[in-house]
Image (cartoon, helix red, strand yellow):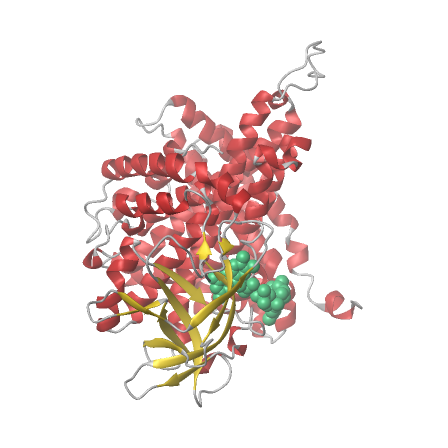
Length: 593
Ligand SMILES: Cc1cc2nc3c(=O)[nH]c(=O)nc-3n(C[C@H](O)[C@H](O)[C@H](O)COP(=O)(O)OP(=O)(O)OC[C@H]3O[C@@H](n4cnc5c(N)ncnc54)[C@H](O)[C@@H]3O)c2cc1C
């Protein structure tokens, strides 16, 4: 497996879509100017391409295994690569500086994460969940918990996990049954079975820190009664070092379609009957709120997997399309066969992959930019606007991008023909790995419900309206360039279509026809993502037309062409969804299933 980090595109999108220059002027981010960031990314790219990417295939073939010793054993080379990862400081790159992190902006952090995910998605999950644990402890943990755990988690010396799911509690987390019994000295004893726990155990660090949702005695049913606990694999001794083994057991690992290197564990807490020692994070019954701190970042992290699998699949498919000689060009009446990259249909598939990948990258970085502005900008109104925009975009990043990741990696197989369906080319692995992303971290159906029921109604639709107004601003800039005229027309129509369906759904919610809104939620999310992609590609096209000196003319021409392909070939699909979104629930409700 090889991976070439698309550094020029990373820098282009950072600087010309997500305005890194402006982010680097915010308080605390002055060290992250574009030139410094470009150097950091070059270094990161080298690391992930040389150390993590070569293990992608190994991890897929060997997988992680539960040994007779009760410990999960990772594939050959993972422990060594992880040690290098920690040593080089990458886990801490964008963690808070006050706890030993590099303090880079979120918008730079996501580029580093994107590289890790494209190089080796299964391995990257370990770091992603650790970051989630860091955020939950940083925002909600007591000073004592921060002192004991944050630095080790931030440096990557220990890893973190997220324990929500139980056999009876999947999408409905509120149904969970794990319980927490308070002890006289203030700690808790945790009992219960958690399933599907990613990187729930491993042999690469000396401790594993689980964040576990459980219900305290007497707590009400549903999400209101849930609390969050920190449960270490090894309980810390007085010096803060891992000591006694806590009372839980990894019962088994799941056999899965993809991400074989990522151990997906069934964990029994309180296995011996004593209960696993757990420390409350925040107050009792604030567990769901605290978990959302972790989950929102993780949802963006999972959305990024759609982009990563698409990028990896695109690189592989492009290489194959240049190598594979098959078929003669019909129009030229040629007698010799050519590389398949010459055929219009193969070019269509490759450009579809490239355009969607670039649109996803733009959306990801723009969303992360809102994350930075929501935290660091001084003006209250701008901070609030970006906080709400981040919340609006999160389910779209998660669901639109992961659905596309599956579609694009499937196209990657198609471009390989039969060789895509056999394992040796590696095309199939991207597809198999990508397939989990629409499921975990809240299924894509649940994301669409979140978008329509919780995000669309904010400020009576005002957050969506403001975003739509921002989108229309690019149209006047596009009018300076004749070859962007058709794209501009398509974007105008697509934005109008989005405004129309947003108003229609808002109307159904206001009139109490909730099921009509729910029936249209998923196609609405797809429409929203597709139109956002159009906006972002329009920003890219206009920026490329201005000819920034740090990029070669060849690169900029390709940016414009790819953006036009998105605008003229892919964006028109958005309005095709309008009738589906507005069809309502009647047919669905009447169907016998
Ligand atoms: C490889 C892997 C790794 C995972 N890692 C973790 C982890 O680290 N930690 C953790 O806690 N969990 C983890 N999970 C669990 C994952 O988050 C759940 O599988 C996911 O939330 C869906 O829950 P479920 O499997 O019970 O499906 P269900 O909830 O049974 O959903 C089945 C289908 O019904 C739909 N559905 C359910 N409820 C509704 C509703 N109210 N309205 C509309 N549609 C609905 C869903 O969208 C889905 O299509 C992991 C799962 C896998 C497979």
